[in-house]
Length: 151
View (spheres, helix red, strand yellow):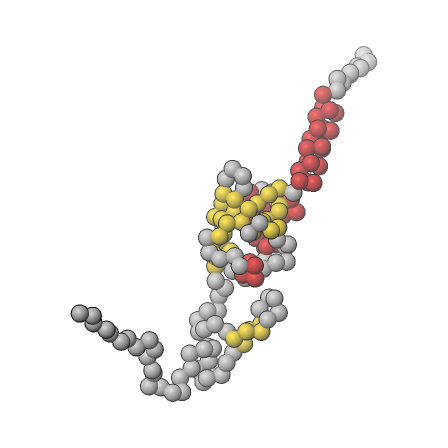
């Protein structure tokens, strides 16, 4: 014996004039301009503040969890990473989904969500320059210095 049940998928509301979108109570639709230039309807009431996402920044040997606004750019993320790691923003390369992201790219536009992982690499050109400078300073300091003191 098989019992069949029918379920209502949608409930009808008795209020015909109620509006669920926008923030105004009088039924007007409010619009916002996204950083990418797209004009969209506002999401809902009470969402004045930006959504905050937690991004895991991973280097080869350790990781850092950083909370930042969902509409922030990768340049802003680099400044926060600089405070945590001590690596200057111009020395950083941030990779998300296998691609290096530019400073002007926004997190929400490339699909960064809560608890996503972003790979942090040091720029190889700057790393090479640092090593060359350290080697040059090491050679200078290893030269014997002769001090001549005249009495």
